[in-house]
Length: 376
Image (tube, rainbow, N blue to C red; front, top):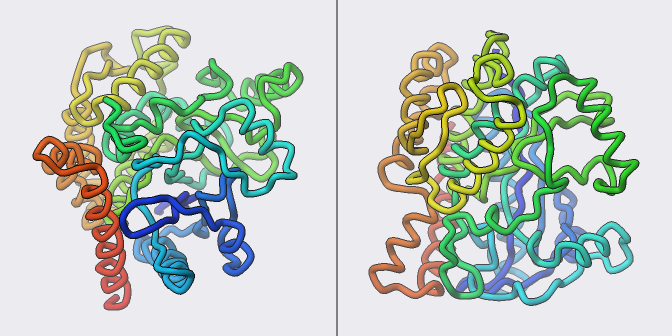
């Protein structure tokens, strides 16, 4: 059976030529499914959990359709792809809720490093120990997702040297997070962080992947992958999600797939491997050289992903999701958004020209996917 899945989608709003314009307070007031982030240039919506990929696609697209219509009526505004303020604006924080003390803490502690856009991918898992095992595997393999989704090579009108500037600058908090050996380990560690003040609340755990639930750390029911940059192409998003689901399904079925059991590295060394791989993927995405947690060997992110794709393609056919997985090959051959944008930059386009075209492409691909939904 397919897992339940859902997305938390963070988006920038702005002009069709790439200038970010914040109106999150108005959006949240007028459109019920949206919530604001600490900075009002971001807005977020969450899709309900779905097993079926067609229904998941519809859940991603419909709120964006309503939001685009709303923005158009508000003065020719639109939605922006990418995960950083590519053309400018990171010199200041623009508060969405000036009276919120947690937002005050975020602004004063992190500044605009957190004013980014991304997609959080959630998978429903009821067994807490199985969830922790999946957490350990995805913590080591999250850099592969970043390699596929990197979409933030520009900041303030210039290339930064990172394919994912978002993940390169984002403050992962607390600074060191273990590969929790059990659910109880996660509970004990979280309680200790709250007592020490290194976490302000249970949500203040910002890392590539985390256990989640309505009463965390005690009651868990989903695994949340947070490393992904914003994937503007909804078909590509489903392909990444399908690969993750296939990997999680394998972990749930085989308890021996576990970094604490199948790796030449100690738990502490694995944490260092994960951190180094995330940095490499943030800088070079699909071309990054990564350390494989199972063998210690070096491989490129592209080759690692290709191996997983080929290995899990038969399982995708058995589950009836091979059509959703297949577009992954387009990313591997054509590059992710950051790589395509950087290629355009090297050919002489300016960041504004690139982002203007990307905004148009974002809208076009959503409309194209809506046509698929309507036809279904």
